[in-house]
Image (cartoon, rainbow, N blue to C red; front, side):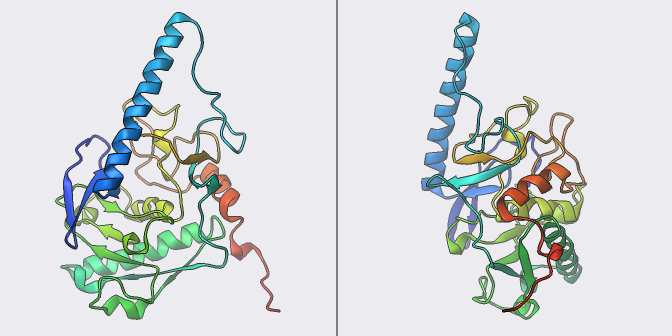
Amino acid sequence: MTDSSEVRRPEIVIDGQVFYRVEGDLLLDADELDVYIETQKALRAQREAARLLAQTGVGTIGSGISPLGQPSSGLLGIMQDGRIVRWEPGTVLKYCVLRKTFPKREWYESVVENMRRATDDWSATCGVQFEHVETADESDALRPPEVVFPVRHLDSGGQFIAAAFFPNDPENRRRVFIDPSYQTTSFDRVGVLRHELGHAIGFRHEHIRSGAPAVCPDESTAGTVDLTQYDPQSVMHYFCGGLGSRELAISEIDRVGAQKVYGPPLTGFSLLAA
């Protein structure tokens, strides 16, 4: 997550590899950036064609209907090979918070507590499970083998508050970064992590949909699927155009969309062993 007014795409070097920031808190390598730029060009060309057609009164391009039969707006999932991307049923998303990467003990402790609260919120929303592997927090490795993803401090120079990954990212890209600006942000800090974990379980930004204010970041929706109607209070919506919330709470519409992908929370069941 970042300040939505920033449109720069500067380089960020992470563990010797160069990445580029897009959509505020998403990091792409050089090849991915090339694809992203070409997709953006195609999006702009399509929208210009639609604008010209509308001026002539002929019509517009596209039906505005998603593969799930919903209007083209709402909590966005990710599509790959024509299927919705999600973690395999039964997957426990084990994580650690790498203490030695944080310059201050209190920063580490606040992230540990806020991750606990943010993961609890998602687990109470839909059928996803997280587990903090506390013993891995003391690891010297940047990717302890016993976790799905590490949470670590990274000074990006304020280019983002925090940044995460998607479920279909390569294993070595599954990590959550916390910038020093996280400690002083005016956004709810648990909410920032709720937002980033939304990416980690497969949801895109809400404000890139039609219906969002024009001043919000305008990015391609290629490879996405609509799960609900447009929700300006979504946890995945940036604070832009007078919409969104600094609390970054999981809304009731988010709950509906998340349960379409992951089902209801496991706490709602009596789980019996065979």
